[in-house]
Length: 131
Image (tube, rainbow, N blue to C red; front, side):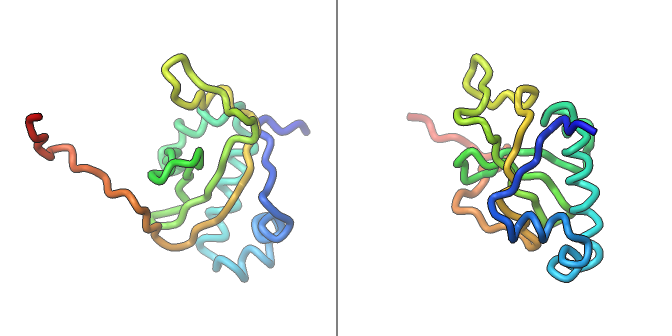
């Protein structure tokens, strides 16, 4: 069967910990292991990365620290880190990533605990100072 979104991994250890049932469960525990397996299957079955937006639990989003990384939710705190394999990745006319054009990704990490990023989101209600 042909994969629609082609998955590859940053290294062999990460590939084994994501794809070997026993290793995945030992490393991430039974709950996260099940979600990781399901999420990888959903990515593998998608026609393109934009199809993940139809799965509310996946919460596909760019990494706040940038660097071209994308985050896919694996639950309330855990995330799967991806990046498009194409270099440069497909872009829309306004410069944003063309999620519909991404058909191959590299899994770079599985983050089982809450992330701490250098940047803080600005609250939507924050007042802006006049120049």
